[in-house]
Image (cartoon, rainbow, N blue to C red):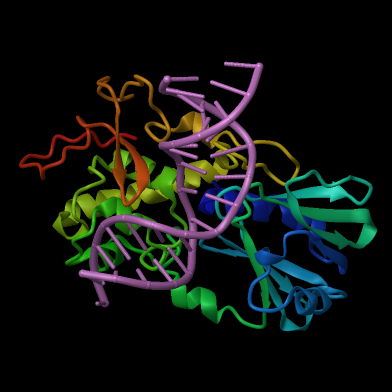
Length: 284
DNA sequence: CCCGGAACCTGAAGGC
DNA sequence: TGCCTTCAGGTTCCGG
């Protein structure tokens, strides 16, 4: 599932091949993936535009195009962007193909059909619905304290809420909470400043490590060249079940449902109740 | 405003 | 072997 580190990896790896090239043609096989306009308007708005640069905001990938246009994509659950030669036949899960100059194509591959894309002159919609970028200097521990103040929802649900923080999904929420020693069901507003400070640090460490590992290929995530990432091999708790033991204290990991999401955690390192003392392991 | 649950999708995995 | 059910989760929508 593409979350911030996966989208960032796609951005980094795709950019050198497509920046400076113009869009020659587009094929859309699954029309509902185009939102905000008709498919015809979408296609005619794209043809002839040059890719100026690639950006990312949360889990959204942004193609900055000539004439001030922006092509925004969201890969949702199962999407990936594959860089191909024009001669390469798209497989059955490719929902759209963007043909560029010099015989290069981008295949938007998405088995589950949840992915979307649209063309827009500005990024206002994204800014309205997204909280701060977790890796941004302006996203301080104190800012996170303010965002969680008085919240009664489980901290895991709050981390998944893109209005509060942008880019965190199910896998990295579990990893960050484990690293910070916080139970996913603790109400956000009950966390101490100390805990939130640790969580803030954990979020950054977990995300930046995952970017270095080129993302986590737990499902259908592929990098633009078709390779997989290796971040999932470094997971401490996320998606680790079937008698897996906590890498810190060696007791069995548990799984429970939080906000309709499978949540993996260590019942020893991440106690349900607020602790009196602070002998929580600070290592990651 | 805040919170939780369903819907959108389809391949994979599990049960019988 | 094969059919059926359930699970997976990012975002949006809707109800309380």
